Image 1 (cartoon, rainbow, N blue to C red):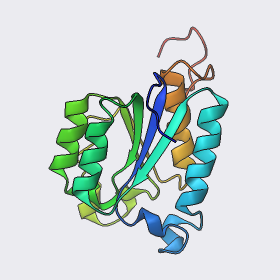
Image 2 (image 1 turned 45 degrees about the vertical axis):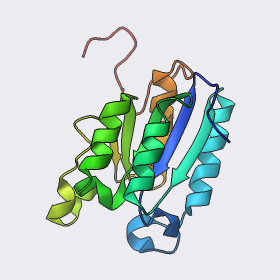
Image 3 (image 1 turned 90 degrees about the vertical axis):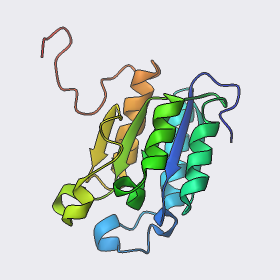
Image 4 (image 1 turned 90 degrees about the horizontal axis):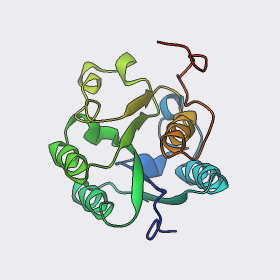
Length: 168
């Protein structure tokens, strides 16, 4: 499916090695496959009236090209797991800044409990939100956040525990 022509298009971008989910280090990343994640997200997005597309690549240039294409294809919100490029890709960061589409950064594992080189993200300071350490459920939390921001979901996004009318 393409988000073309939609004003409520959601694009999910999966970085390198995420095509191996379900079999790659299941003690870290879980047993859920990328196909399972995409199917659940597509169902949730469509149930709330959003167009849905997903893209995975192990190649930085292909990921940059897809981010740039989002500028003109109806994408209103991006959910991205940059995977290993989180810590290295100025090119993907610059592409996200250039298209100026709001996004959530997602990581299956808690990167802050892992090796020190995984603690820095080139994306977090640009992101509307980050979701780490929730496994495959993190994608759903990010999608609900995006749906809420697009006005397609009335319930508060995950993490927003303030009562209606309460000040923070």
